[in-house]
Image 1 (spheres, rainbow, N blue to C red):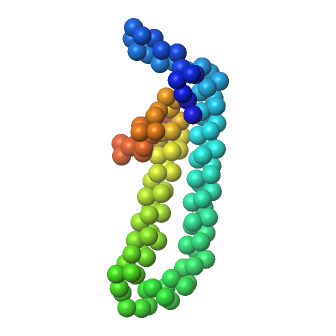
Image 2: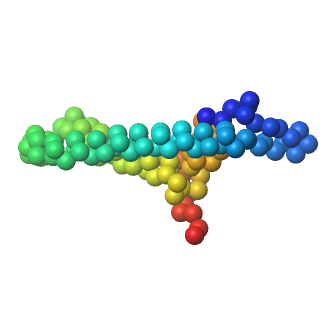
Image 3: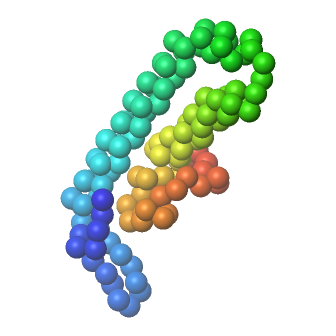
Length: 118
């Protein structure tokens, strides 16, 4: 992650520049994080696929209770949000983790994330 020791501040215009090595290291770390997140999401999808039969038998064919709705929310809405977050971390997103100088507060996925122009 980029920090202030890698940055050079221009006090007149408050421009922050980073050394090439710091930017490369930040991008490498971001890619490693993205690969780990995609791997985790893949395992989650695999788990959904192999337990779908049990879900149909236990949840869908039984009387619907608050717990079954909570299960379905956890099963489908949370992974959907995770997928949106992964897209926001991808190189296709303009406001992604791959932009050097982002702080943790700025690294959240923006709803205005668009594909980069070719």
